[in-house]
Length: 194
Length: 285
Picture 1: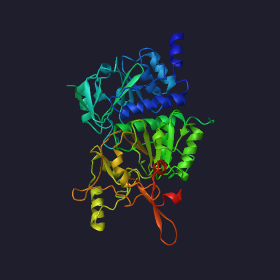
Picture 2: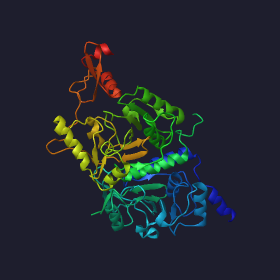
Picture 3: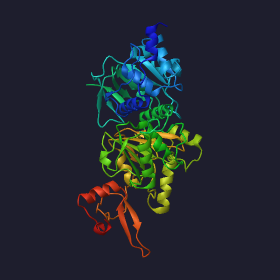
């Protein structure tokens, strides 16, 4: 490992972990509680190719108890080293993952990821999807956390509708871009914008 | 601030609780198991709520803690002091000024906003527990959406008492899927649960966390011919005269005289400060 990647691996964690993680979690929680609403989340500086928002989610939620899957488009020695040094989370196969990170296409097929069981629907994967932007809504959302309807940019409708149809099973999604995060839990109904 | 890690808990514990909160929000009303920690207070004193609050608080928050609506009871005072010491957060007794409100057995009278989080202390999170003691069975009943037993219980109330006698911890159905225990709040508070704030529930001894995102549909179970009724004592508050608030009955002497007062102390005080007065308002102040 050269000096450059060594620096990347050891740097970029939360500067004041208890406080930074508390702020980042509040953003993640607000996002999950209000599907479609974009929140600011920051604190982490992950290796190049991964957004600040996705890096902050990993530092806030992952530790040695959670398996992380890295899709081919983000998987690199630098990121593996960064995740290992900053969270201690093991890198695992998609089928075993608690968290997965990558672009939408690279994470397909979605049915590899755990949906939980009828008795324990919480034992399901949370997918962190890297997006170019979050501000071009193409879907209308309804369900818990949404007063009437909300609008959101999603990468694809059919797969997300199929996921919602599994409720109470299913995967939960964070969409990240730069320092922004929005979420789409399995409880949200998604339809195309007219 | 003190030498405690921010908000007392270590980071790994907070991450574990935070993951449970997120899954709870994704499946409203479902009880997520979590590895509840020993806290420096006994089980039954709000250890679940305290752990959820600790994982939720940021240094910018203003915390309010109520016990049966009151800010000045032992449980509320000690939890408020706990977070003043370990998290260094501001605290308040005013509902409108709080960003996080931890509660035991009440929902504040004032309507909560989108910027607020309500954390409930829950003793028995499983609504079916007194009907079916085995966890393996209740888990199956939730999985299969088999809630007939709960309706039988409510029916037995009617056959014995002529009405649904359950007055607190009145079961609700969340988004048409999970039957949930709203914690021992009076059923008067049930209709308020469809609110703008995020609601988080923590049961420390029973090791469960569950949640309601804002505006989640929460329906109190009932029958067409015996509809749910949010009841309260049929009196105005004797201190502030409010007719819309939940009341406590206070015995005043051996001769049977009594008074009714708002259980929400902040609501009552703000009404009296605004000039409202009840039957005993003047002498009691």
